[in-house]
Image (cartoon, rainbow, N blue to C red; front, side):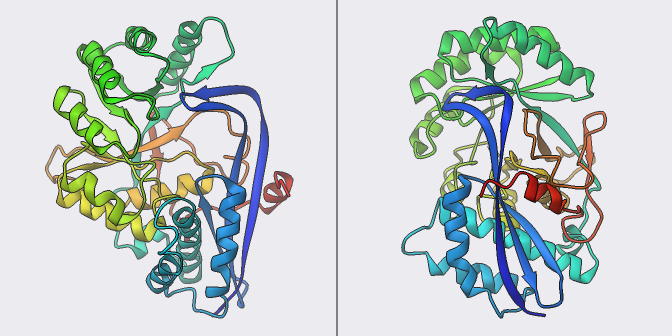
Length: 376
């Protein structure tokens, strides 16, 4: 079996209701899907997190290195592609493009062998994963608190036992909104907060100290990804667990987060940090350092399936009869493409999501949807 083609699909869909996080507004959702095709008619799909069109250019630069090669040599391909742009792109687009290719190769291998990826990676250690709802963004409505309360109540009604609030609107407003959300959902439901690196260390510490009594599960991306000292200052100044890593890449990028104990929760994105191959290595590093691993996941059903396949093989950290389980980030914001690209959507029931057990990623991609949302 040999690779004959690497295809890319840039997808786009307008949103009925624009929303914002601390760094900007969204009025559309986009995705870059990668398909690796073989001479035996078997193909695999992956997804790249990040800007689709620039990422597509890097995927196309990698493609000639794969044509004519065995799709099963995934580790060799990863090293070759990474080294191809090592002098120019050890982070960012070069690794995001590599991530989509790596996931597609794993999907292809699983399909060829009739086995889910988690089985090929030595699992499963678990067959379902507890999910937390990501949403609670800003919308163009007058009373921000009112619709956040409504949205949070709907997540609780859907069975979620944890949810994440987007912050970064200024310390005073963030404190007020966090208190309002805790009041709305009560003490039994987990509440995370995510600033998307809107703060410097001083404001992050001020916010954290003002909400420490609200039992916040973690404070995510409090400062800029490059501000390792800011992470260290915050972690020393608050009882709230600190999380981060969605803007970091590869085992080398995460080494400092771990060796310097900058976070309690590590959050690589499988479609960005290096794919399944690399994220399994990062997860093993996190386990060795006693740091929790909760992958960032904000893409289509393909990204969600990839995260689940990885979560299925993560060990308890540490093991025990009442061990803390890893969580799945379950994006609840508007995304017309997310469920459409798979013939059967990945859904949550009472706050839990089953790990797909079909071959490869365990999902079937709807090719008609790929064409319907295609932007080019």
